[in-house]
Length: 198
Image (cartoon, rainbow, N blue to C red):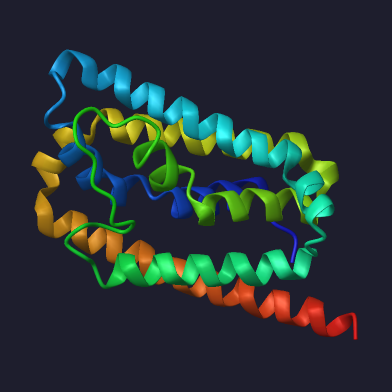
């Protein structure tokens, strides 16, 4: 199944989960001075963007060096995505990734794994490895996804106040449900690709 540009953007948004990240960003940035919050959000999104672009450009070469096949990556990506989706549906008090940070967050856990996490990295590498000739299209999809992410996170506090905790939780669980289906599809596709080589 060939993915369109819009489908790639939607998948990346689902795995980066801007709505689900709102409570985490609001909580972790609460001790930070309001004047600095904008800079922290932009910095963390920029770091996550660089990580994803780096894996889009060099992830395939890294897979070759490590001897990891596309089918193995697809299966592993499906498993990781499934585990993250389950944590989104059955929410934990400490969040999807379970990290806690003292003071101003830097790289962990906001840039990674909240935005550029294992599922997002796997999705980016899979997109490029499946159709490397469309590299610039995938880079564009990452850029659009990150712009949406930045827009949502810049309005995170306002959205959290307007929507309320219940609506945010329901949205995160809905995204988790969709991610579960995508994860199962990735896993089955990896199994089929592996079986085809035998």
